[in-house]
Length: 302
Length: 254
Image 1 (spheres, rainbow over the protein chains, first blue to last red):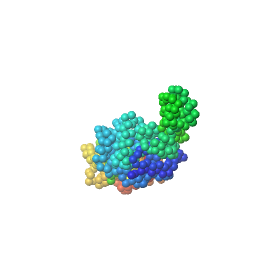
Image 2 (spheres, rainbow over the protein chains, first blue to last red):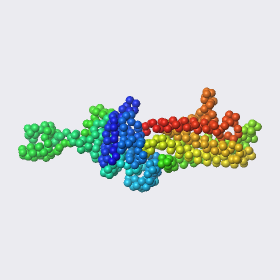
Image 3 (tube, one colour):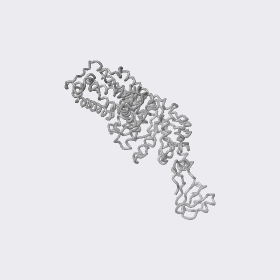
Image 4 (cartoon, rainbow over the protein chains, first blue to last red):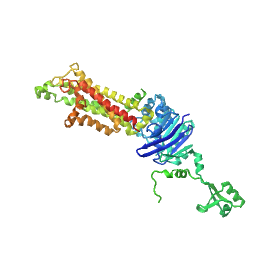
């Protein structure tokens, strides 16, 4: 099984440190979300993974080898960094054919990836006339040419309509389900919440978090419970060891007691509850919390 | 070999490639045709010295001045169109060995330019001589002294310019910048050559449009007694620029 290993990766442009001593791995069989605010260094890191940019320090290997040393790169790694990076005057078929031929792949692979991405009907049309969604599919078709075990996508859902977003999301999931290692970058936590199994969060080029999606949710849930009761209940909650503050519309926000304990307490006192909801910090909140220190340009709070 | 094959697919799958080649022949032969119309006046209206230096081969091949620019555009676009569209990222992800990629691009562009340029030179020669023969002025046959050398040398001259253009494209990465530089090299520097200091004159012996163009002559020229040396010098100069292109293409981030 092929993994991507990033070790101590650093990239400087002049005095700017864009990627700073970054280490993480991308494992097979799951979608790894690569998350960070704009300008955090995600694209630069991806460029270093596939050898487009040279690291100032550190190493990155795919299946134990540097990308430049892979004998037939497309059979090991498929990368889509920029969907608009096609020559608009070339047909989808010719674009894919040139790529396949450059790696000695058979011509039938072109037809196969066109079918898999639903582009067989426009294969002979010039890519310049494609919508963003179709270009995205063409880019994905190119990544699949060599049937690689590692896939890398940079902001694949940017600018897509809901249908396109859903298609890409399902596609990523199915690629991971086939046992491939999938690395997907995004600056939207909500997007990752629905796609990724594992998260690597960076800010200003540094690693902020490297954890499973479930761990992240858990680590950042604040453990409060929202309670609505028909009669006053705050006093009993405080007496039982909870801390209570007022929420919206007469709700109580309770910490220090679990939902189960609160339910039992209400039953004991014969109080009817109309709502009992454990509060979970949204992933957006968790992300904001994680990256607050590292956002490049912060709007002043008004 | 795969890389070479892929680059050829890329070049032939663009309509602009074939428009450029069509343009080469239409403009190239058009200029040959037009430039022959005044031949009679030029020959019979000139002095004895003019008539002694009469070179019908060179006249019919004068079209190289425009052809070199069109061949140059072809060579430049092979590299810069990929930078302009961002396709270079995809290409380098598929072919991370950059030396191999640039070599493939250089070979494909140079071979296309050599074939098209050579065909143009032969056609320009035959059309030009046919037009001259109708005007009661001396004209040349392919078998005459120095004629084949001029026609074949012309094809090699145009190939060298295409290779120079590929190198400029790889160094400058932008179509406009590379094209401006090429125009500067083949047109501006020759036009201003009188202004430059003496020590630069040696380079001009091998410069496009100047010394290297001596290959197009069939009448012995005292300034350039060995035209193959001048053309060889051009190729050496191009090789130097190409080497620089390889170095920067290998090093730079894309």
